[in-house]
Length: 148
Image (cartoon, rainbow, N blue to C red; front, side, top):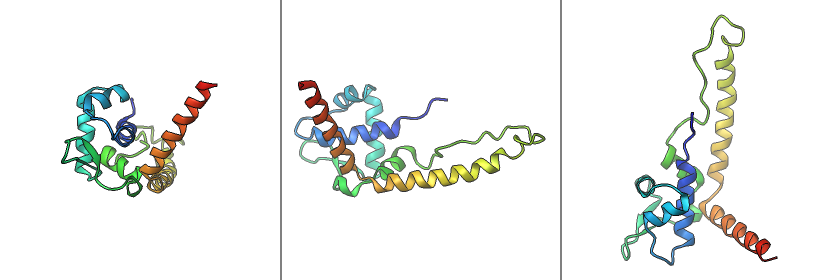
């Protein structure tokens, strides 16, 4: 089963609109950076708009943050794109007569619940401003290494 990249792509999109806020941003341009189709980008923009994370700039009709990036967490973006989708899925079709198959769901459910809570807590701690700042730092380091 292929995992969804909507969350990652939405983070990419948000950093892109902040970093390139001085140029005309279109779904086609964002799609080139993400390496996806403009339709996927427009769907992501719609999800982020519905969640109140971005709005259209009334002056030029391109996406902008609805509030400061420091006020938006990665968890906000996760909820906007993935909803309350479980991070882990348990296989419920196991042999109940087997020692492992009959007990694995209950045991894993406890572990998975704790792991998801920890992941959500961490995502809620990290702001979009931190993501943006880290991208810009990584880019400067990459350019500095290339110049050597």
